[in-house]
Image (cartoon, rainbow, N blue to C red; front, side, top):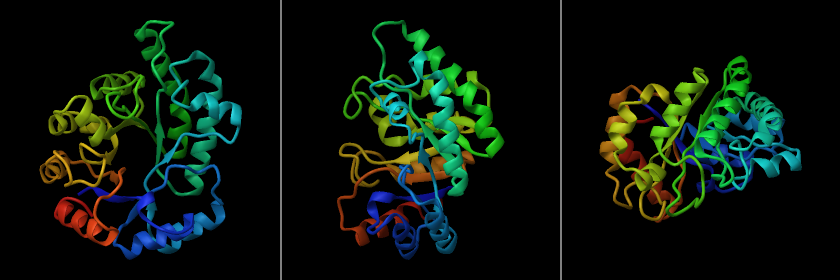
Length: 266
């Protein structure tokens, strides 16, 4: 079975209070990607006391100059982020360890027009290969996320899971895998079930949201019951995190989500 994680935006309260509220709703994990403003001591206390895991954080830096390069308008398709990305990943992995979080989300940035796509593809591989030992030493997994360019992230470099899996294979680290976002991949390429089942060994994290609208599973065109069944049958035991809004009131949405994952997720 996979581990079901709640969207941090679904839970009210402070950073720390969200863990306890997630527990009240029956979640064993919650996803709050930002970490640069977090008080690690009080956050870790809330994580440990509530027993609710933090399923992933985002690669960030407290250095504003480096953070500006991490945004999608720039990113690891550029050579000038090569050294600074080591700093950002070191910071983020250290934060992950303090928060007992096992997944760090990485993004590529937007596609460039000044160099061939192959060069950018190689830059992503080169950069992730350089930071892989940082993750390996800490026991953390870097998860690279493709995003759709038709609705939400126009201009983004990494769109298909096929290219994403090629990058992961080229990096060749057990601690660098793909973040498979069902919402994004349904829009970009479809064939969600086969792409997950045929490449599950390369998937380190899964995001959930329905199409259209990016709301909770069951509100759109994706047959999530079948998707959850396929994920479970694939042998995937990592996190499946709600990365979406909700249409129904929170109590109703949560009840529907647990019914939808029943038998497949916990």
